[in-house]
Image (tube, rainbow, N blue to C red; front, top):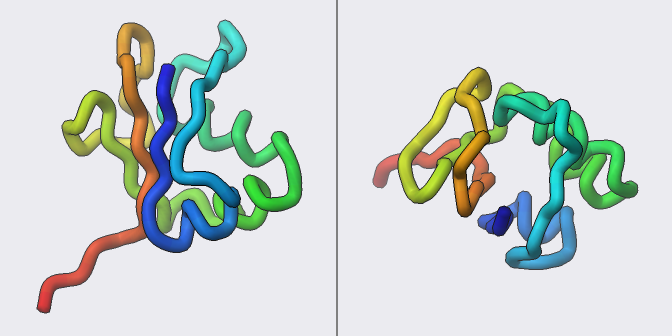
Length: 83
């Protein structure tokens, strides 16, 4: 699965994208966020407040309870504002 990071999530993680091999138990976006948080200081900082993180699975906005099985790409980004 390809992970793509945007805005301050990217800055905190330290990369724009990467290939992930999430553990078999990671069934939802929330599970994936929890798993990523344990991958190091930058990830922990990026995902320290999971409720502020938005996600998309295969370019479609997804809730944290959405199942990740079968997704080829997951994107993480901060809340968006209009203007």
